[in-house]
Amino acid sequence: AAFALGSLYLNGDGVVRNAAMAAGWFRRAAEAGHGDGAYNLGNAYRLGLGTQQNLTLALQWYRYAADHGSAIAAFTLGRIYRLGDGVRRDYPQAIDWLKIAAERKFAPAEQDLGQLYQEGIAVPRDLEKAIYWYQRAASRGHTPAIYDLARLMLDGNTAQRGIGLTYLIKAAESGFAP
Image (cartoon, rainbow, N blue to C red; front, side, top):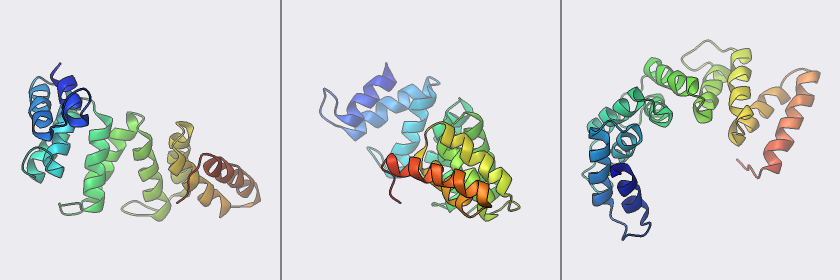
């Protein structure tokens, strides 16, 4: 119930939008072991929504949420460490968190892993692994991964270019415009 109340206050759904009330309810949910509540509390601390901005607490709550099964929290940690967003860039930690999120079938994490392998960032450049991760994300309908897969395959051999064109059309038809 605490998570549901936090969501109502965060979104102003049937109540006056109140970020402080939302953060308070997310804290109660998180302290009761609710992974999504912990993730949302992490967001509140990271963004300063209804609470004072505090990256250290945000990271703690994201870790707690990820440890309790939240794929999006694991992805968020992966992104924070990959980009060095308020922390020292840490590719090994980023890859660990992204793989956890990808194991939980979170398409944006799969796409990020594809990009890392395609560009050879913190891992050996491996186009087969890049294609693997892009295809996993694309199979979930993740349009940015479909586009990345298309671009990668368009640079390949003749057979890959045909497949790449198919993916590019699919991305365009879904309205993706990078």
